Amino acid sequence: MQKINIAIDGYSSCGKSTLAKALAKELNYVFIDTGAMYRAVTLFAMRSDFFANNELDTQSLINSLDEVEVTFEFNQTSQKSHVLLNGEDVEDQIRSMEVSNKVSSIASVPEVRKKLVALQQAMGEDKGVVMDGRDIGTVVFPNAELKLFMTASPEVRVERRLKELQVKNPDITREEVKENIESRDYQDTHRATDPLRQADDALVFDNSDLTPDQQLQKAMQLVQERM
Ligand code: DC
Image (cartoon, rainbow, N blue to C red; front, side, top):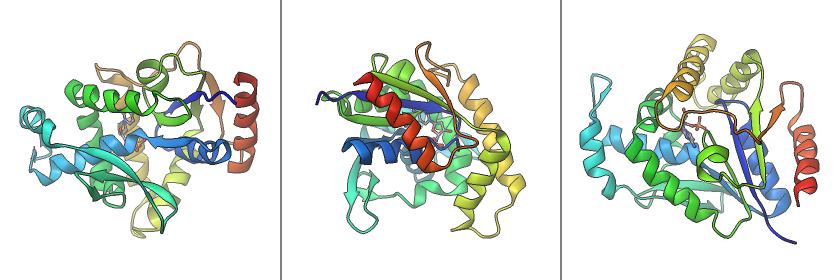
């Protein structure tokens, strides 16, 4: 059967990657978490001390971008794809609150976006990719056969993220999570380069009241209509 590309965009913690992963598994497609790529560059910038007093030294980052290699590798133990920064598995480290708090400033640097978008486009050349992010349907794959724009109520999003983060950080508070989500929403939609917005031909997909299984069934119906 002919393969398609599926673009999944939306605010943070809307369940994009849960759905994208499940769809990729069901279809035997490649799942690509583009947020992980921006997070890996953020970790690189942190390690390089490009954040002095929380302020990003954009020029130093741009000058070093050629030294940053972001790739994915399937991990046999976790049975999922992990992001590698210059060959090192950083899948766990990129999920920290510190990275979450700094990633929006990295994602707003046009040179960073240019580099990562080119990598993402190359990954989708042969189709059969489910990619989640903020600009997939608008910039990375404007011709994707299926585009979903995911939403969920703010309460549901905070609750989901809190549960996810509490596994590794039991002390994290609901307020901290809420603040991070709100500040990233604002930055993701207000940055000058490729801000988060719904593509004209994207379908809005609200999963506030859907279980992961229900959202997969619903999305699979849409996939079948497009194939
Ligand atoms: O999906 P996530 O929360 O892991 O993404 C981390 C950050 O990266 C998010 O705040 C916005 C940015 N991002 C982006 O600008 N473009 C993408 N395609 C994916 C993520």
